[in-house]
Length: 126
Image 1: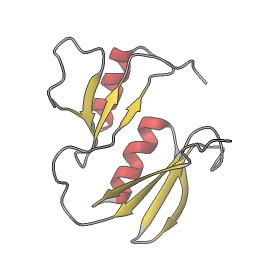
Image 2: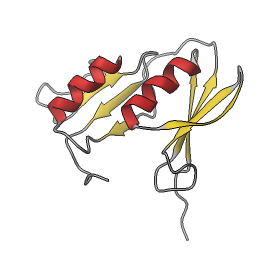
Image 3: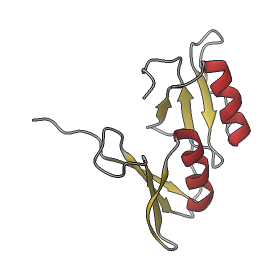
Image 4: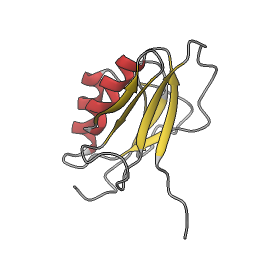
Protein backbone atom coordinates (compact mmCIF):
# COMPACT_ATOMS: atom_id res chain seq x y z
CA UNK A 1 0.00 0.00 0.00
CA UNK A 2 1.19 3.53 -0.75
CA UNK A 3 0.54 6.92 0.78
CA UNK A 4 -1.60 9.62 -0.77
CA UNK A 5 -1.76 13.32 -0.09
CA UNK A 6 -4.59 13.99 2.34
CA UNK A 7 -3.89 17.62 3.29
CA UNK A 8 -1.93 20.56 1.98
CA UNK A 9 -0.79 23.09 4.59
CA UNK A 10 -0.37 26.72 3.59
CA UNK A 11 0.92 29.31 6.05
CA UNK A 12 -0.63 32.71 5.45
CA UNK A 13 -1.30 36.10 7.02
CA UNK A 14 -5.06 36.08 6.32
CA UNK A 15 -6.65 32.60 6.43
CA UNK A 16 -10.14 34.09 5.92
CA UNK A 17 -9.21 35.79 2.64
CA UNK A 18 -7.30 32.79 1.31
CA UNK A 19 -10.09 30.41 2.33
CA UNK A 20 -12.55 32.49 0.30
CA UNK A 21 -10.16 32.61 -2.66
CA UNK A 22 -9.32 28.88 -2.74
CA UNK A 23 -12.95 27.88 -2.11
CA UNK A 24 -13.89 29.94 -5.18
CA UNK A 25 -11.05 28.50 -7.29
CA UNK A 26 -11.61 24.85 -6.31
CA UNK A 27 -15.35 24.87 -5.47
CA UNK A 28 -14.42 23.85 -1.91
CA UNK A 29 -16.23 24.60 1.34
CA UNK A 30 -15.04 25.31 4.86
CA UNK A 31 -14.74 22.03 6.76
CA UNK A 32 -13.24 23.07 10.08
CA UNK A 33 -11.66 26.00 11.89
CA UNK A 34 -9.98 27.04 15.07
CA UNK A 35 -10.39 30.80 15.48
CA UNK A 36 -7.17 32.76 14.96
CA UNK A 37 -5.25 29.53 14.22
CA UNK A 38 -6.42 27.75 11.06
CA UNK A 39 -9.22 27.13 8.57
CA UNK A 40 -9.54 23.78 6.78
CA UNK A 41 -11.24 23.81 3.40
CA UNK A 42 -11.99 20.90 1.14
CA UNK A 43 -14.39 19.20 -1.23
CA UNK A 44 -18.09 19.19 -0.44
CA UNK A 45 -17.96 15.49 0.46
CA UNK A 46 -15.44 16.31 3.19
CA UNK A 47 -12.16 14.77 4.28
CA UNK A 48 -11.05 11.38 3.00
CA UNK A 49 -12.09 11.59 -0.64
CA UNK A 50 -9.84 11.65 -3.70
CA UNK A 51 -8.95 15.33 -3.24
CA UNK A 52 -6.80 16.63 -0.38
CA UNK A 53 -8.03 19.31 1.97
CA UNK A 54 -6.14 22.56 2.51
CA UNK A 55 -5.18 23.85 5.95
CA UNK A 56 -4.69 27.62 5.97
CA UNK A 57 -2.62 28.33 9.07
CA UNK A 58 -2.14 31.86 10.37
CA UNK A 59 1.49 32.97 10.18
CA UNK A 60 2.49 36.64 10.21
CA UNK A 61 5.98 36.09 8.81
CA UNK A 62 6.45 37.55 5.30
CA UNK A 63 6.73 35.25 2.30
CA UNK A 64 10.38 34.91 1.27
CA UNK A 65 11.07 34.27 -2.41
CA UNK A 66 9.43 31.71 -4.66
CA UNK A 67 7.66 28.77 -3.09
CA UNK A 68 9.44 25.42 -3.35
CA UNK A 69 6.09 23.66 -3.60
CA UNK A 70 3.09 24.93 -5.51
CA UNK A 71 -0.33 23.77 -6.60
CA UNK A 72 -1.31 23.04 -10.22
CA UNK A 73 -4.97 23.40 -11.12
CA UNK A 74 -6.87 22.10 -14.13
CA UNK A 75 -10.11 23.51 -15.54
CA UNK A 76 -12.88 20.91 -15.46
CA UNK A 77 -15.86 22.64 -17.05
CA UNK A 78 -14.35 25.24 -19.41
CA UNK A 79 -11.26 25.83 -21.50
CA UNK A 80 -8.03 27.26 -20.12
CA UNK A 81 -8.67 30.80 -21.38
CA UNK A 82 -12.11 30.98 -19.76
CA UNK A 83 -10.73 29.56 -16.52
CA UNK A 84 -7.89 32.10 -16.54
CA UNK A 85 -10.44 34.91 -16.74
CA UNK A 86 -12.43 33.39 -13.85
CA UNK A 87 -9.32 33.07 -11.66
CA UNK A 88 -8.23 36.64 -12.39
CA UNK A 89 -11.73 37.87 -11.48
CA UNK A 90 -11.50 35.90 -8.20
CA UNK A 91 -8.31 37.78 -7.25
CA UNK A 92 -5.44 35.84 -8.82
CA UNK A 93 -2.60 37.74 -10.49
CA UNK A 94 -0.47 36.63 -13.44
CA UNK A 95 3.19 36.39 -12.46
CA UNK A 96 6.41 35.76 -14.30
CA UNK A 97 8.90 33.38 -12.73
CA UNK A 98 10.95 32.70 -15.83
CA UNK A 99 8.50 30.45 -17.63
CA UNK A 100 8.86 30.34 -21.44
CA UNK A 101 6.71 32.76 -23.43
CA UNK A 102 5.08 29.82 -25.23
CA UNK A 103 4.39 27.80 -22.07
CA UNK A 104 1.21 25.74 -22.13
CA UNK A 105 0.44 26.84 -18.56
CA UNK A 106 -0.12 30.15 -16.79
CA UNK A 107 1.67 31.02 -13.56
CA UNK A 108 -0.56 32.92 -11.15
CA UNK A 109 -0.41 34.05 -7.54
CA UNK A 110 -3.17 33.99 -4.95
CA UNK A 111 -3.95 37.18 -2.97
CA UNK A 112 -0.92 36.59 -0.69
CA UNK A 113 1.48 35.91 -3.55
CA UNK A 114 1.59 32.09 -3.37
CA UNK A 115 2.30 30.84 -6.87
CA UNK A 116 0.17 28.22 -8.60
CA UNK A 117 -0.16 27.08 -12.19
CA UNK A 118 -3.22 26.82 -14.40
CA UNK A 119 -2.66 23.92 -16.77
CA UNK A 120 -4.48 23.02 -19.94
CA UNK A 121 -7.22 20.53 -19.15
CA UNK A 122 -5.67 17.21 -18.18
CA UNK A 123 -8.52 15.94 -16.01
CA UNK A 124 -11.98 14.83 -17.03
CA UNK A 125 -14.88 16.80 -15.55
CA UNK A 126 -16.20 15.42 -12.25
